Amino acid sequence: MIGVPANGSAPSVDSCRNLLDQADVAVIQYGNAVDCIRGDGVIDILEGLRVPSIVITHAVPKGPTAQQRSVLEAIAASASQMVVTSEAAGRRL
Image (cartoon, rainbow, N blue to C red):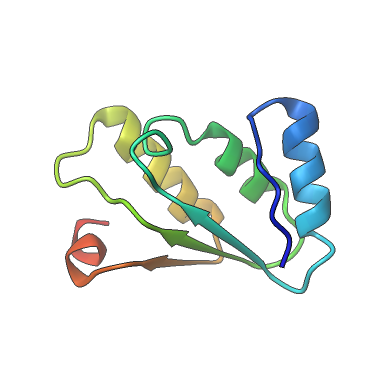
């Protein structure tokens, strides 16, 4: 397991992606209140991965803003699989 914080800068995203690509599968945990607004770094990491990815989504807002919806849709489109932490979150997603 590799844990690397990505601050959204290009070198940080590249560094994180390169480390994750060394594994058989990338498991990314995502979704606190701040993440649901700013997910560009996660999307950038996912879109460039060469290994399969599993995103564990901890927050799926009941009434997402357009930005939150856009971020979650982009993550869902880029991840190999998504996991949510509740049935209600799964229905919302």
